Length: 351
Image (cartoon, rainbow, N blue to C red; front, side, top):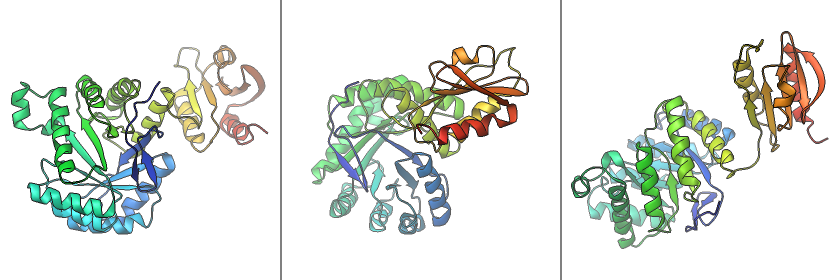
């Protein structure tokens, strides 16, 4: 798919826009004031594939903790600010690589200008964030409800405020929990701005419902070439957000590398715990860098045939299983050895 060209923006040691690879973001759920706990979570997120991480900054103590957090991590740190412009100033002073604000709730025009001036002095980007849940009353009345058109107008109005303050190092985010509204809003704003877009479905929900909504929404948006960085918002462990985002990008052909695991559904022929086995394989291959496909099959009858499109696979039976390469059975192993044998094959892949 052809990516829409947007302005390139540097966020710490990463860049988005300008045709750069789409980067994955997540957000910590620790108390930011606890620098060590927050840094430890960020390290886990980075190991899972997170490119940029965001922390809530609800207090001055949280803003000051950013400095200690940054010393322990290797990916860019974004400060999420609401309501109090002084927190934005403190976050910038303590090393935030980007700040996320809603200019509509940061305070007066004078306070917004102070935040913009501080960001400009450090040359760090501002992410202008607009959510459907906080759309201004006048825009709700103008469009007779919360609409895609209202979201776009709100975002561009806020961008204009920052531009008038003399700054254009910006990223735009317009999010809604209404998937199709979110898609329409991105289609519209992509035609009206060249700033990079942070894409996500806000308040998507729990692991199952949130993944479905995010996959559909992000899939529809990204497949049109729209979007420069993404977050899958889930109610749960942020690590699941990163895993889902990686899978969405890989499914759309927007990210290469790493093992893709495919597995068959269970049926009456299954004589192993296939659900548990497939999960174990996903964990087992998480650190394997090769761009290959691994199949996990629950039946030694059809396993080899079903695994033909995979580079390597395993098929389980009662007490034993098969190691399969390119659709051909290599050898039979005891069931308890399936995972270790698969791991051994992968570690020596290409030798």
